[in-house]
Length: 280
Image 1 (cartoon, one colour):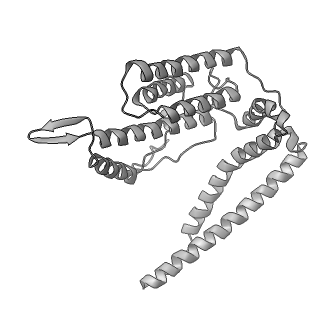
Image 2 (cartoon, one colour; image 1 turned 90 degrees about the vertical axis):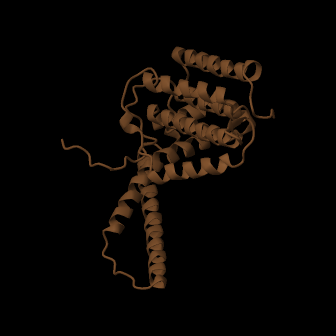
Image 3 (tube, rainbow, N blue to C red; image 1 turned 180 degrees about the vertical axis):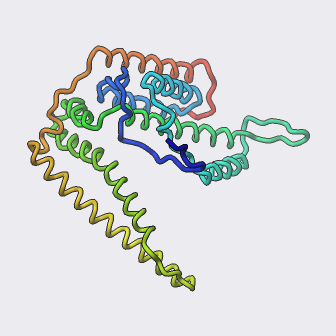
């Protein structure tokens, strides 16, 4: 096999599970959804360095247990690094405590530290979502949502319809991304007459954008029609969330580990280690 070309970017691979039969892959989909929800609540109310660090370590250990290869990680565009550098420089101008003395000048690092903390929080949340998508089969999400939302049926909330909608959206998203990439590649191969003036180039770009949008809508409608025919042939939308789905012993162990990690992070954040964020 030939080596990949230097500088070739790796695309983002989401909503497609990485093949494997690890303990993380065998966890119930509802366990992963509840874990994401619990971590999201923790980081929403206490987005300090301690909870972020605990969650980051948990993600790394889980990825190691799931045997996630490094090849699934997307390439970071160069312009994103430039934006981060510009954002960090602008945030550093805000100053704030803590202060450091550089010669006769006192520099505040509060703005830069807040920017770094928000960046780390974003990376952790993206990694958490990616880890769930790499270890969860899309077909298992709808039955898990239907099981978790079963108590809401007493309030006459259409949990079943919600589960089916989520399942169809998760199934269609990767498929439509591939279709749009194919459309864009085919569009770039079309011969285009070079425009001589700025106004002509602007009109050409607008026309190309309209053509791409029209083709994308057409492809989405065609794919939706094909998916509807396939669902009808397999027994209707009711079969999507009708599969038995419930937690097992390993899921309760995972819940215990998650509660221990989040509880330890929250205890350290509130009692032992200082925090720079005001309490809500």
